[in-house]
Image (cartoon, rainbow, N blue to C red; front, side):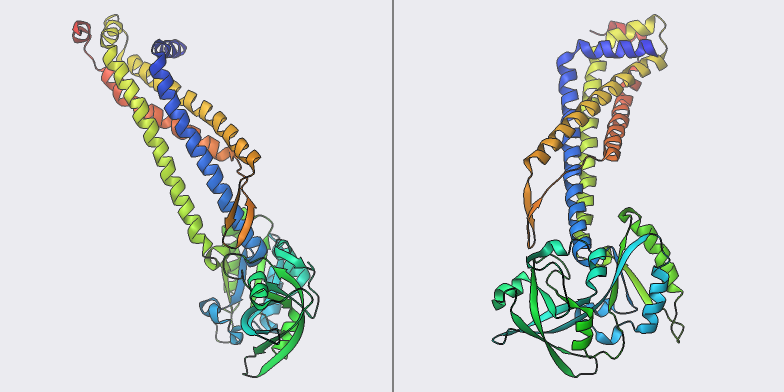
Length: 412
């Protein structure tokens, strides 16, 4: 086998220009795919992090049927004290959960005593909320990053449209589930940078203030946002938690809770899926480049070396060894292209990171793209290139191994 490698490498070096061109094509394909996968994957992970860590959380628990009517923020589908206690008892026992935050969500009217507009509000426990969505305070572009009772965080678009500044007094008016209307004055404690997706234009108040505005007699919540220790275990844990929650039944023996991951709560999941589909097709392009390049060079090598093949067959070289010789040539081309492509790709990615390319996403501006090189991607790309290189070499190699020595020696 060692001699076959030496012969294959020697044959590749005999046609340096063709070998260099083929290896270059493979290298360019590997670099393109590696850079695309790293950049698109980093963009996807960054946006998922922005959405889950500043608004939604990794997953949420609601009362059964709430999400189907979530646009209306129905107060009659809030979780009551008994259900909350049962839910918290389950969540407290899960080692995968690092934090969870109860919320009351409702719609109301926002007034600066001159103009009035509608607003969506989240009543939160600030300490629990910031543990569940730690990037929330990074969206506070003006004012205090701590939300106290009597204070309100409002989205930047609302602040600009209503000409409201930090420290101004405003009024929030809301209708509770019984139909009565109540209002409460708040001090604008901060202005939030608007973000893309549901919840990106919501305001925040303390949960005690929300209960006062809605005149709640007892504790009620609309949802619980959950943050996991390991985001990579999201799907596995969601199945586990969903199984536990499904066992909690009401008096009619129907499930009390429903669980949704961020994927079902955010429209960005569709964009993430599109990125995955694009990545798949880019990988197919890499396979096509490698397949065509190596098959072309191996077919040319067979036709140019027909008499040589006939000679080595005539002196007793077995067809299997002839086949192996050409397959090893394709294998070597794949190895060289993959190794050089990975090195060049990593260098290109590092250069992109040094340039600190910024981009805007929806209302979020000035985000810095930082591409990560995933060792798994390096392995997958390299293995794919090598396997495709071997497959591309099989047909020309098989043709060479089946040649009749007499006919090959007569070839001009």
